Image 1 (cartoon, rainbow, N blue to C red):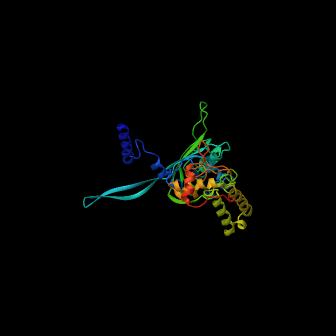
Image 2: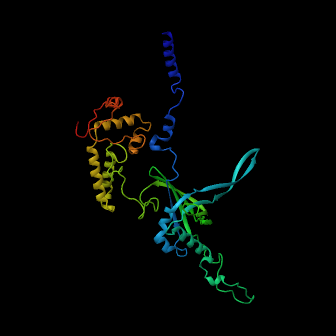
Image 3: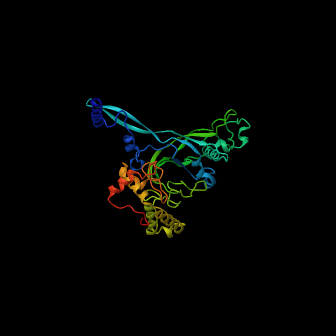
Amino acid sequence: MANKFTRFLNGIVNGATNPKGNMANWRHATRIFVDNNYALAPRTKFMFFVQFNISNEAVGATSFNERHSGEVGLLVKTADLPKYAFDQVIKNQYNRKKILYKQINYEPITITLHDDNTGVVNAMWALYYGTHIADRLAPTAAYTTDHYRPAAQDMENYNYGMDNRYFSPFFNSISIYTMSRRRYNGYTLINPRITNWSHGNLSYAESGTAESQMTLSYEAVQYSSGQVFQDVPDGFAKGAYYDLVPSPLSVAGGGVSNLFGDGGVLSGMESVFGDVSKGNIFTKKGGFLNTAIAAINTAKNLSNLTKEGLAAEFANILSSPGGFDAAVNTVGGIVGTVFPKNAGTSPSNNDGVASPRTIATAAFTGAPVTSPSGE
């Protein structure tokens, strides 16, 4: 009996002095990476978009821009972000070491592109090559004979190498955008020039895809950021290749039967009243129809709210480190939110009994939780 009592006291002491036990839990990581709608979570490498701004002054670029300029960015496989290096000198300031910058160097970056079946990437390089190098447009006769001539004889009417009288950059700019949480960060390379181009290699022994690779130098970098919309940043979600059908989690695509979060009832009301107050229903193409659809979906989701679902949402707000902000700004299926529930269902344990956490939360709020029908 004494041993049991001693072990009981030891358990109390250890629990108070070492609450984590022998292994720490997930709280530290979730506070860093999950709070505030994943504000500090690392960006993923595959969420990016590249826009090539080709000058119309380049040889044949006008017709290419009309047909294919928006497709080149879709064929990017990998892209480096800008790199910098400072030339510096260390001076002695009364025996104190002082670092001084002499100049900034914009380090070259590499972009790899898929060699597509249509030949868009190959055509872009051919235009670049023909713009800067005269060899590409020279006729076959320019290479059939050796052009030896007496010193007094005029040169033949052929140009070679970079003797093509073109000095402007082929690309006005190339912009790389990283995206996350409906926002973008933009890196725009000013007057980039290709310093190396490779068409890759071919092999009968491999089943991989063909690709081309270019190395770019540039004169400066401009930064930008903002919210992502159609054609914002420039060229994004524009053209026949993008799926513009609304997500089923958005209000326009049906929404979810939650009070909070994207696609929820409050989000739908904000969308509908926002369109009306801003006049979007009359000024935007299809604005009236889009607002009407959002209103119908919001009304449907409002009618599907249940007291059990509302209680679970409030319980999530009270227990989540992100609190109310996370509930408003996240969507179903992401940590910190509640899955939508059908009318007549309630959160329960495995034995079918209502969750004690739900009951306790309803009692903690001090207000009755009712469904829109007054149940």
